[in-house]
Length: 80
Figure (tube, rainbow, N blue to C red):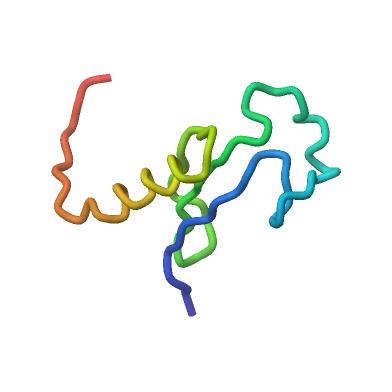
């Protein structure tokens, strides 16, 4: 049985709770190290969409809220 789509949020190079992840230690010093990211995961567990990096969690959460409330958004086909 499939689950529900959901957003996952994480901080690059960090574990939940704010500890540095040893497996991501190589990212230390990268331009996005410690910044916040989100990904939308489908009911089958596969990533469907993801966003850019955000310097703070509040900015990222505002973006997720905007996306989650786009139910009536128009879909436009563009060149390129």
